[in-house]
Length: 320
Image (cartoon, rainbow, N blue to C red; front, side, top):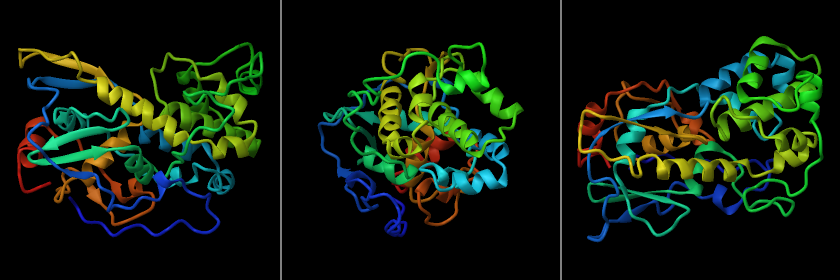
């Protein structure tokens, strides 16, 4: 594993982190492999993500939409550090290589991968350290899926003010609005961006899906929205699609391309893979030194071919 200096503790003025947010890189995510671990995916085949998260590329749209004055105010929100994220290119081949290494694991809230004789565990603690998001338990006003139990009836202020005549809006509509318009009111502009980050990046889904109405109701209270554990919600959506991405899709023909969907925030999983290897050439990713959160340590990701990644890293015993 790559050895990076442990990040410093959050400043006193920062929100109190949960236990899952303060775990250091010395966390036990490397486990000695035993003889009982078996891979889920025994047959190699071509795999390609058909639909993935809006990803960090959408951060460029946020930076374009917010004026300097609005950016200075947005930095104080729970997503302010997103402005420091680099718009990484999603590497479907890298993620696919790791998914092929998945092994059976009894804990449903984690994923385990076996590369050579090393077991690598992807957990909510890793997700919190990489993204800097709150991954604490859901508050009492939410159900087990992280959705408020009681919501106001009717259209939200978002639809009424910026999408008149619509009782609901699609994700693509929200993207187009931020891309083509400016909002004078600083508070409303920040609220729109907060909804966009949650719905388009952290809880991504197909563009023809509706923006969840509870987001626009929750954002009316910036304090409640900012203290909500969006990291927890994003992690488990991400985990759900990572687990089913290749399930039941094996084929005996290496000429067939199998498509799968990755929703949530799979870029965080991609960053976790980078951290699992001792040596990554600059043709794959650039490491900029230890930063908080860790996703800010990586930039200029490049797309790589499956065979190149598999031979140099996943089939090389010296890299883990």
